[in-house]
Image 1 (spheres, rainbow, N blue to C red):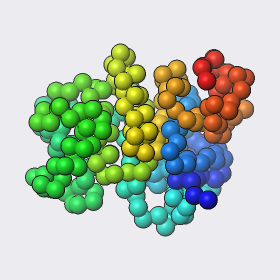
Image 2 (cartoon, protein in one colour):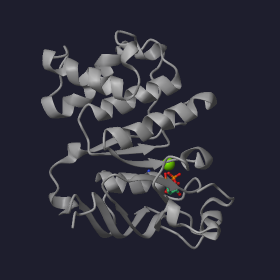
Image 3 (cartoon, helix red, strand yellow):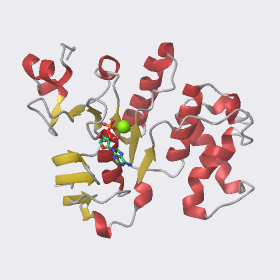
Image 4 (tube, rainbow, N blue to C red):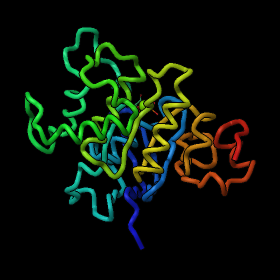
Amino acid sequence: MVAPLIDIKDISFEYEQTKALDNISMKVEEGDFLAILGPNGSGKSTLLKIMLGLIKPSKGKIELFGVDAKNFKNREWIGYVSQKSNSFNSGFPATVEEVVAGGLAKKTGLFHRLPKSAHQEVAEALEAVGMQDFMGRSVSELSGGQQQRIFIARALVAKPKVLILDEPTVGVDHQNVQAFYDMLASLNRDKNITLVLVTHDVDTVTDRITHVACLNQTIHFHGFKEQLHTMSDEQREAWYGHSVRK
Ligand code: ADP
Ligand code: MG
């Protein structure tokens, strides 16, 4: 049996006074497109940071690719696009490809000039997010949604097996949200990248995701992961607070 890529068991976490996560268990398996839902403050970002090893739980266990997280070495297998990262100030001098190449810096050391070998990898990452025509442009000229695609390309260039995204559509224009999720779905389907996404776009993601998990103390399915097409109408109502299509 193949081990889950991310397996968290009975995780709790507190920030000084605040209990952010209370006994959460969740598995992410290869090929999943998992959406994590929940109201503001329910611990979604905290859960992602635990999956990434950025913070340590006060209780519970994490395995990554079948290995105890403490002993897991292949951190580049798990890519991350953090919440509200799509904000290059006007005048920020970097070009699209310089920002994307920054995703290689962890592996190859920081560099000022892009090594020749990186060009192909950067071009492929840009193509995967539909931004291949923006080479040479300054990132600060791009829209919020285009900048978010550049951040995703920067994560992709390190060739992750799992990509973790925290509210990636926050800066995306409303009319471009569908196309944005189509791009994510094609990463999942065509590039075989397992996706973990925190979002509030319940109606838009439903057609694309394979699984949902909800962090909400008030509903029955707290911390549970459910396969969308096996859910009853009542379950879906409970998850979303309103009906969504199967
Ligand atoms: P979400 O992403 O679902 O909005 P978070 O994981 O960011 O939720 O936050 C969960 C809880 O932890 C909230 O009550 C929040 O105020 C608190 N919290 C988050 N980050 C910190 C922090 N750095 N220090 C103290 N409390 C925090
Ligand atoms: Mg958050």
